[in-house]
Length: 302
Image (cartoon, rainbow, N blue to C red):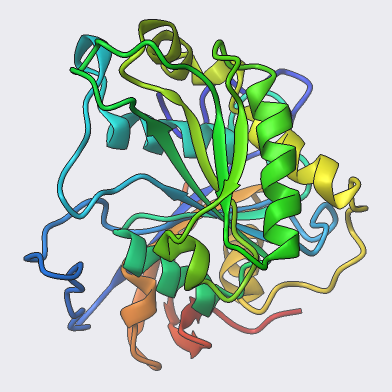
């Protein structure tokens, strides 16, 4: 699956993938509790719809990445690999993905504690961990099926988002035991914003695994759930986000249109004033990295 795969012909936006390469910066490693540091993905991914399409909401998607290692299911299924594919599909896949609906989306790349910190610093409006479930049997001996969505007790907006995810994702999954309930997971209790923890389907149940692997057909339901909950907020009515400089700079330099995908290398660890290089599909240029609330931005904003 490629980053910009399968976009319908009706969506004519040009795309730029911009990688910010840091020069001379020492980036500290962040380890999960009780574990040695190891690499998962080098950076979070950002998907911005353009100022004229942005509806003002920031959504952080946090794909499964377990402190104790990956979890497997039927036919060599890897939860971590497949959840990464599903989150990107939900953000910018074929169909009514989150970015197409006007949301500014960030896909996490770390352990839960790292994604919590990144989401809090970024100022997400909603935080959505995305996992697959298991019934505790052998890798493919499960008989349970269904979509489970959890929220933190006392979070009204977390519960409301969870109910919409259960309804909209659950109605597309093969299992029928769809449930919403409270939980005490750290990605529910330690985020500054409402969170809903999505267990999409069971990966140790063959019909569930087959469905999970076909994310192109159903991951749009995550965006549908968010849009349905927020009553389809209008686009193009919000000021540029605080980190607009990075996106604006690339759009102006490359003439890439209103849809931009860019990636930051360990953006939370960047020191203000560190010199960076922008690499795009069109002209490249140097710029100065600027520390804005823990994230990187390029200036000036319009």
